[in-house]
Length: 279
Image 1 (cartoon, rainbow, N blue to C red):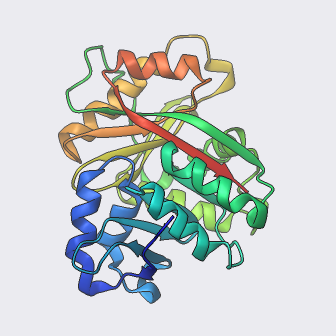
Image 2: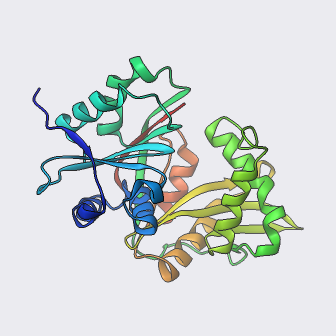
């Protein structure tokens, strides 16, 4: 297979990078948010943008930072990224993106970067651009600054349940608490409180001019099965559409059928399939 060399993309190619990200606004949302906030200079972006294709006709990009995210990666681009990355030490904690790019990329890298802690090959990517067709929960609201201490244990529980490791392990949770605090300050963290306890939470973890991506959806174990999730997610979706972005998106594990039913009731439709490799 003939490939063109992969190169690190700089600020001079920002317009071409943004054009590519506009072609895949949901799967590339996290990369788009980082570039909008910090540009393409690696010392500001806390990561590198690798590019595939001629300088005048960029075909694909790949974000390499805390995670690895290929965007619009063809078979040739995947091969070229793998050739470069296989020679480097793995520093990312995950590979995430469209399944048709992530899985063949992992096939090429697993010999050098493996083993993975978990492989999630089928994660439906969903989006909504209309207000939810169900009643919203009026008690779901933005978390206030003085409520971080109440939100944080729920955030830790969600992360541990979803990712399989505790966010407290690496630095006692200081970095994760900063992330939670930043989301609250930015008006991107939602919760429903009952007697001072969080029984539902969700965040707009990624926001671009094209979409607000919901992550961290969690219902307290003792409240599961009571039917609160649909109205709660409808409240988040409605507020995000009216206040933040023209679409709301998220991705979910294929085996999480209760969550998938909730999102369908709230008006989310499939727009692709992601895959995640966790280390």
